[in-house]
Length: 117
Image 1 (cartoon, one colour):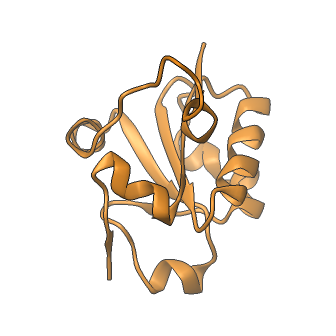
Image 2 (image 1 turned 90 degrees about the vertical axis):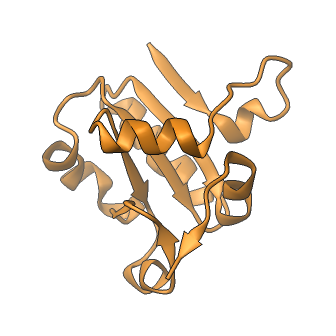
């Protein structure tokens, strides 16, 4: 099982290396999905390219139509990292095995990701 919380890994000695090139390649090949777990208004104000809006409080009800394969890589982010952490825990509890919590908007730059309007 590969369940990764990058916000938690920041303090670990062996960090997982994730970058925009890798993420974008996985998204293009449909090997991964990028989920913005904020509100619709927040999403409309700007989001990562190719990110799907799935508010954290409805992820349990909608994830099976977005990622029916529980082994597909799922990248999560929100404004501060709190809601992506909640979504992370929800997906983990549902049996998803490749979850990457990118944290909040301010954390995205370290992975080479930016917000587009």
